[in-house]
Image 1 (cartoon, rainbow, N blue to C red):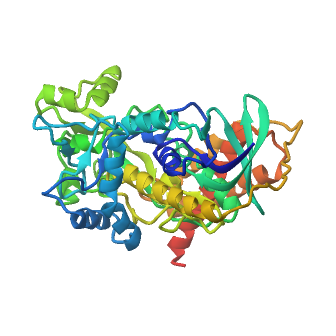
Image 2 (cartoon, rainbow, N blue to C red; image 1 turned 90 degrees about the vertical axis):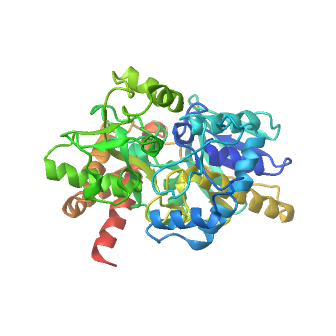
Image 3 (tube, helix red, strand yellow; image 1 turned 45 degrees about the vertical axis):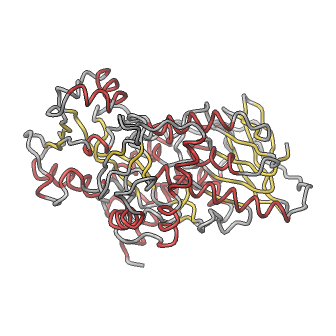
Length: 488
């Protein structure tokens, strides 16, 4: 199978890249599991941007992004992000994305932590799913895009003519070739014991890019969302959107008291890292990890209308958010680092691009401003597509280099429990406030596991790929954390 472009991932970044590539480009779009299973579809709050908003300015959005990121952001990409927001928000509206409107017909914009203006466009509390559904519906109409779901990307190799990818679909191995490759594989949440991420978020794209020689930067810049539903036993934690605090919810400690005034003047509307740190510090002060989000003082009908998905999901867990306090606690949510790219989403591997959460554009700095993630996925996947389109005009190469992959025929499955061990290592070593001693002691364990996976003869399937990805991500995170601790 030969293509101009292979895109790994069908979240907002992968889908929007496909939409913006030339109509005559032959594209293969891969999804590891079923269509719709991605972090994009789980995004509740919305997409931030200054679009037809006379009371807001891109300079304000830019400044809010810098403040949340600790002024460690890339100035060029941040400027691109906020200035081009209107272009891409307008485009997805054209593609059918239905953002909520007020009675006067204007778009309703909500407020989230770290924002100085109401600039979050949303579809109730299921904005990501609305965007993913509408983008996918459009991509499915494109005759030049071959969508392969439930297809595992087992390996990728850089060749003289582009890339060769080993795929596994329904037990059958296949090879696909392309001149260009776009990694849009999402985040790394499943390398932690508790995360808001979907089941596919194991960092595969970062691992493949790293093995091809791409630079990986800022992998220790992990955002822990302060208000995940605390059910204490499920790995995938249901997110209580930042917008709930934006609409007036209070954070309460084990004694039912508001506590944010001890840690930040912005109270509940402080950025996510500040709130997560405050919860951990308050937990140490009180000796309890019982925390709550309370919006019961607001009009019940307004709450149910504004947050229908959250309301329903909480009811399924036995909580009525219009009456009850919601148990919450921080958990892994988002990765600010990833595959290092330039403003056009190019990596240092020729022909390899990365966009969305698996990439590191530098827009987020040390901490992502709420609802900038969907915007980043759109803006920089479009730039990737535009850059590929320019190169395709000058690339007459049509042949592909023959590549052989070792299928490890007859090999044994990966031993059970490797990913569980790695998740525990990261959870105890690098959660909200990193534990330097644990990082040092656990790093050698991670190295041993990674070497065993790389050097051993194991059956190539999803267990092997995800175990190897998890080990690679854990290695990169802890190694970076140790370097920062030493001040190198």
